[in-house]
Image (cartoon, rainbow, N blue to C red; front, side):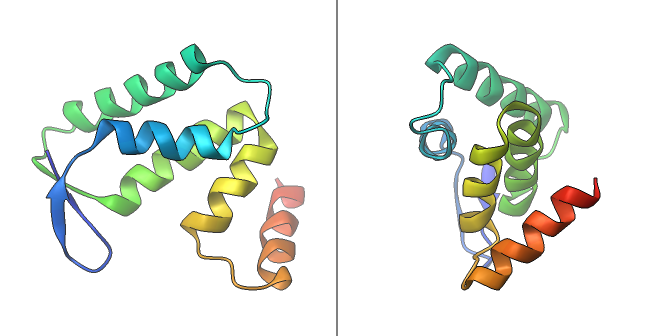
Amino acid sequence: MVIIKTNDKKEAFDRDKMFRSISLALRKRNIDQETIEKIVNAIVRKLENSGETEIKSNLIGEYIMDALSHLDQVAYVRFASVYKNFREVKDFEDFLGKLDDN
């Protein structure tokens, strides 16, 4: 599988990179490595089942966000802050406001 980054650069899919990103969001949260592995496996299956050989990186980001939103809200916000490139406190406030609406 090839990943198309937001700058249109292409790179080989790196399962370990996804694992590290999720692990970082879950750092100091009470979530074991096995759970992270299950999330990664589920996302990889979705990607493989799509039948696409080229996948946009934002799709992977959305899959990760979805998984984290059901697992741990703190990790969800942590990941979102990097994925959505939060620049100031208002970005967090807006994002958290949307969480409250759901």
